[in-house]
Image (cartoon, rainbow, N blue to C red):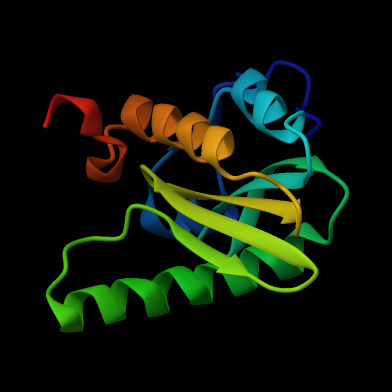
Length: 144
């Protein structure tokens, strides 16, 4: 993502944040690139209310972010109605691709992979980002 001259790379005002009157803290770009460089990963996008704010890779991020936002909301509703807690990560697997969507503070992170990608390390990297953002889903499962 290109940043205007003089813009702090860590904080960028979202078009939707204008309405909410808040600044969004962007994710560490190096961490997004590390996820993108994993075998089978096609693209990584951070989004806010259906709008991409950070992206790495080749994909129609506007379309992906809008659909991922709908998927996150539907997943949260299902989890709530079933009384199974909040969503840590959502995974959609098809014959052609896999999508992982994870809440990260005010943002959500979407990872698009090929169908043959191994998700274990990718999910561990996502959990690390979630922990940095203070997301309950980013909790350390090894201590329980």
